[in-house]
Image 1 (cartoon, helix red, strand yellow):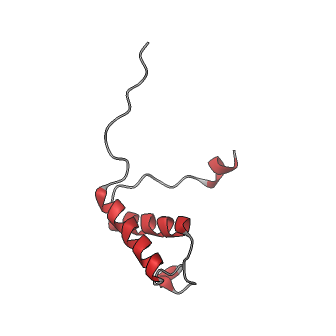
Image 2: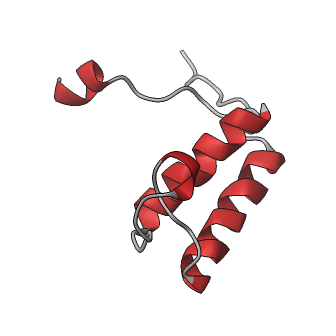
Length: 75
């Protein structure tokens, strides 16, 4: 039995990629902030910058896979 062929469709839309790239640039320039309305502290973590970018992309309606639930992380 042949192996299952992986679909060639993008999981993340190009719009989502642009939003994440924008968040990464803001992190580098020191203007990316965490929290509601950007009232939190300055973001220096690469992972947190990506998470913020994906969250912004979701709000814009870009195609982004749903978040992993906390129960599956524990397992």
